[in-house]
Length: 120
Image (cartoon, rainbow, N blue to C red):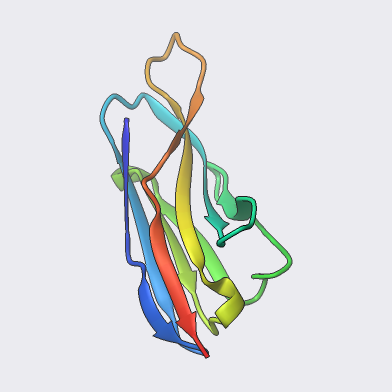
């Protein structure tokens, strides 16, 4: 299974970006999908997650500014980021919990990371 993330870049504070992450390969089903981020010198942290049924969860630092969504037909998860702040600067990683065969247990896969830089 490969996760291809895109959409990062440089944006001014107050601006917006939309991240996408498409899963491909041997996929029987995808459970939770999510976005994590890691700033320099910091641990990786959960930003947002979404279940198969569309139930979402956000970190307190992004509530009201970020929106996670998914397209199950395209095996893709999105992160719409509005009102960006310099403290949102980080490498953003997508994560998917994937069952590759119906008889196998699901496991986590990670994308390669996409850099988001917010200038003040």
